[in-house]
Image (cartoon, rainbow, N blue to C red; front, side):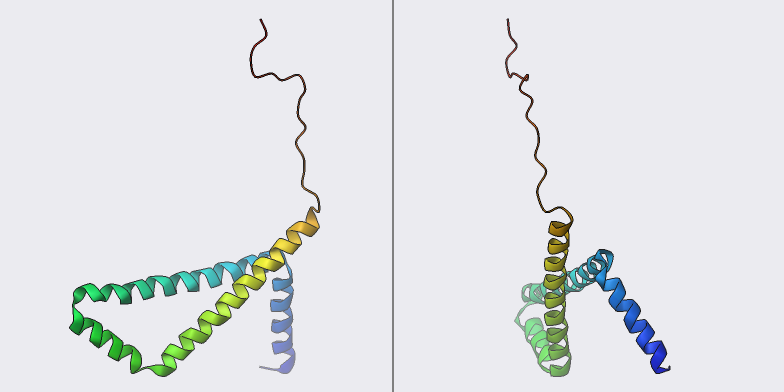
Length: 116
């Protein structure tokens, strides 16, 4: 792939992220990754009910793959940072789009009780 093609793809990705839909897409993907981690973590911790031997095998499996563990930790850290950054940027965009909250007019002719 040529340098121009890579720059073009990078430029498209940056332009997409600058739009609110790009930030929402980043939030959706990172939320899915974080939710998947929570489900996987839950499944691993539920093995405690299968007995101590199964839990020991699971712990040994995790400790035998330090590269995978650190890769997942790094991925989770990146997802958390991207998710928070996108949410803050979306909040700022929302506030800039409507700087003051709309107020509801109260009708003065409304009463709670019927007049007799």
